[in-house]
Each structure stands twice: as structure tokens, then as C-alpha cells.
Image (cartoon, rainbow, N blue to C red; front, side, top):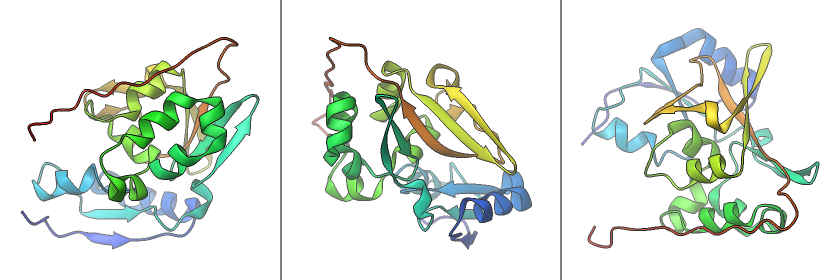
Length: 191
């Protein structure tokens, strides 16, 4: 299928992306890696008039140690997370789950922020964010909010993100001493 027509913007800063969101409101959708949104657009389950591509905003892609835990930029790819020594040592279940997402092409393009923002129950990372007690930081013009993963995921494909907000950072708190983690994915091999 073919998507409906839309205007495309590729801002290079969070401020520019937020200005576009303010300008276009509910008519706009944010594009991160695209593997969740593009299929919805092709089937016309999502028909944004404006697409704002966050791919050129380098300040949203990072992995830093923070208070024994992690701070991860929303545009950090699955591959970057899976291969990060910081993630492997501080939140191994996140590295393990990120390494099992789809195939190499998706892992190299798909982002943690895109996955969490779509709240797809078939996604690998929302359940991991919940299990790790993640805190999600959103940005809007002149404001930031921190939302627990428990409160961020409202329903299937529905989050607490407001139309003028961008998910900017995911904070994974330090795991208590002696904590063990594992990730098991049950895949439908018939597809």
C-alpha cells in the first residue's frame, strides 16, 4: 500500500522539532526509526499531514552512566544499546532485548524512543522499561516532564505523551545489588 500525502520536515535540533510540533499540533507525527509508524501509514491506520523526522537530531542519541544507572537518548538505536558495554554491565536485560529486536536492518535504524512512544504490545522494549522501573523524560517548548514507565504506557498503542511533546530521554535506575535479569522472547515462527 501507499501512504497518504504528507509534508516532511527533518529538523536538526530539539528546539526546531518542538517548534514544528507547536505549529502543526495534532496534524504532525514524529518519525524516529520508522519501523512502527511507516507500516501504520502504509495501511492508513495513521495518516499524518506532517511528518517530523528526528533522525538528524544528534543530541538525542547517547548512552551515559548516571547515578549507577543509565541515561539513554531517545534516538539511540537498538544496535547501539545491544553493543554498549555500559548497558551490558548496568542493565543487561535491556542489551539482551535490544539485540533480539527483529533483524539487523531494524536494529540499526529502530530506536528506543520510537519503540516506547508507540507502546506496541508486540514491541520488545516497553516490557523491559516497565520491569526496570524506567523514568521517561519528555520535552515540550519551555518544559520537561519525567514520567514513570508505569504511568507512561496508558493502553495499547497509547502513551501519556502530549501532542506537543517529544520523548527525549530514558533513565534506567541502578539495579539493587544481587539483582539478576533475563529476557526470553516467544516468537511466532510460522510468520
